[in-house]
Length: 77
Image 1 (cartoon, rainbow, N blue to C red):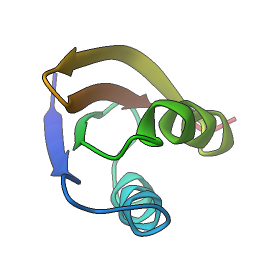
Image 2 (cartoon, helix red, strand yellow):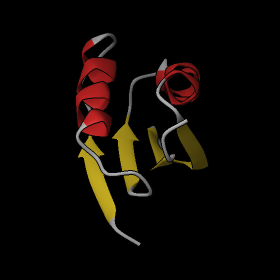
Image 3 (cartoon, helix red, strand yellow):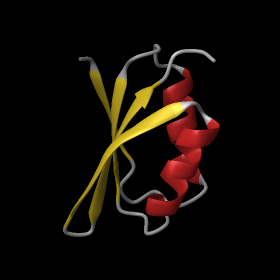
């Protein structure tokens, strides 16, 4: 399993979602991405982003004030 990491701590919407979109667009299908964020809106925005960008949200964990989202880029539709 190839896992990339994107640390978005201290970025706020919409900049964090724009950076996430750029990262996902450059990933290969089937790759995993760990997104680290402390923006309060990420719990809402990242699942919506996954629907829009054909990604699967595998897992979400919260540690202190930081959210960890594990995404997988799906195959082309």
